[in-house]
Image (tube, rainbow, N blue to C red):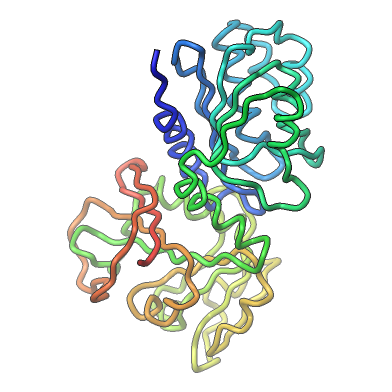
Length: 335
C-alpha cells in the first residue's frame, strides 16, 4: 500500500494554522496519527500555552478511537494523559506513524517530553517537518533515533517553517502581524464588518499578544476598547500611533485596568515586546509594511461601506486559508 506522507502532514498543517496567533509563547503545531493501513486515527493541534502539545492531543484521540476507552477523554493535563497512555497502551501504537509539523520536544517543562512519550508507546516511525531551534526543547529527533524510532525529517519543511516562523521570531526578537477585516468590495468602515466568530478569534489573539498598535484617527473616530472581553481574556498594552498626544481620555481603551497605553509618533516601543498585533487599514498598512512579518485578513461575504482598503502593487503568498463561520480567514506574507 502506498502512503502519501505529504497528505498526512498537510492535515497536521491545516489543523495547526487554526491556532496560529493563539499559542504564544509556544509555537502552533499540528500532528496526525495514521495506522499501518493509512487510516487517519487523529488530527490534532496544540491549542494554548501550558496545555497538551499537538502530539499528546493526537495520541489521546487515537487511543480513544482504537480502544473506545472513554476515561482518557476526561483527562486534561499533559501529565495525566502521558501517564494514562504509558500505563494502558498495550502496544496498540506499535504500527502507527506520526506526522508532526515540529520536532517533538525533548524536555520536561510545563508539559512532559513528547519524544519520550513516543518512545514509551513503542511507536517506530515519525515524520517531522521543522527542526526545533529552541535551546530548551530541541533534540527530540535525537532521542527518537537513539531509541530505534525511524525519523524522517524535513517533510514539507518550507510549509512547516512558515507555520513556525512566529515562534522563531519570538525566540530571536519579536513577531509582528497586521490584522484587518474587509467586505467583498474592500471596504472597512461603517460599522461591524466581520462575524461574531471572527471577532472572538481576534479577541483570543489579543488575550495572548503583548502589544496592540492602532492609529490615532481610528481611536478618535471609533472610540474602541481594544480588550479581549469576548473570551474573558486580558487586554494587551496599546500603542496609539499619532503626532498629537491629545485624546479624549473617556475613550474606553484608556480605562481598561492592567494595561499601559503609549501615544507616540514612532515604533521604538515595539522593542520592548515580543508578540505584536497591528490593527488598521490602508494608512497603517503603509506605515508598518517594513516591520510586519505576516498579514491576517478576515474577509466578510458582504458589500457596503464607503472607504476601501486601498493598496496598489502588492503581492502576497497565502500561507493558509479557511472558513470561520461566515468569513474567510487568510494568513499571508508579502512577496
